[in-house]
Image (cartoon, rainbow, N blue to C red; front, side):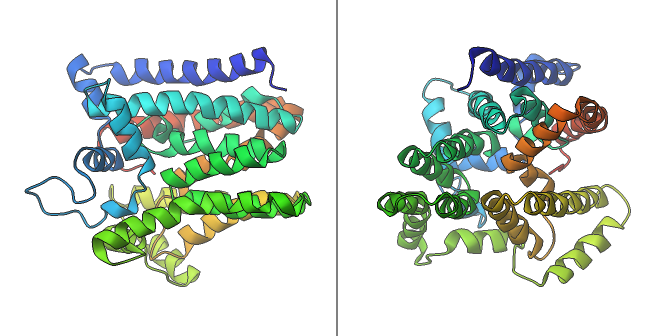
Length: 354
């Protein structure tokens, strides 16, 4: 059972890291401008959906990529906006609160493995792309559902696991991979067949979302077409995706930097998957492997470093290693921490870092 001290430690690491980022990013920024600096990239698109729906702002050219974003984050924005008038501030508050929930659950998950919970939280918040846990993005909200869902499954509380996983499926397509992994976890633990119908629940939000866009566009896969139209996520052979990404990464100038990060992310992703397979963590390998495969068969790599934030099994394993060898966590922090700070500064300057 998660002790009060463990929950406190997880929250101290999370809130302390947020306070540190706040101080760092406030320097040289007028108070009235600070919140708006976070309204970049997907954060702006989430606000557009929350404010105007999937047809976008009236009077402007429709953004064909909007259906790629699942409704969980826009709905959360609309709810918080009822009490927080500023859309950007609402997004930051959602990520702050949802992140706190996710970190406490991550600490508990790590403790079930005999690791120090705070170590898993620290490893995650120091990861180079951790800025997306702070911005008005969907990562923190997804983890606030996904990690408790996995924790409930480990405790064999399948109704709770299914409902929480359904919440994750409302937030990101990654919820589909979580749902499949839960099926593997269920059968691996040889649970009673009478509980199996609960495993259908996490798939229902995807069906409902697909039907919603079918009523709008006549296309059951409108969200997938939006990914193709907005970000070029067309299926190709993995070696073709690698070649295109490598060539872009070897270019010159600012445009090459994100692709170099994608190459690094791909290396970490493959290493993490192999690590989980060696440890025979089959259900977690399914969760990670499906995400890695989906991202590495697109026309080019896009979002691999950012997606690593969602791989909570990786952070649990890292915490296990750090518990036995604390110096490794120190070494990790010394390398990853400065990169996280650098990427946060780059993100707020308008550069893509994920």
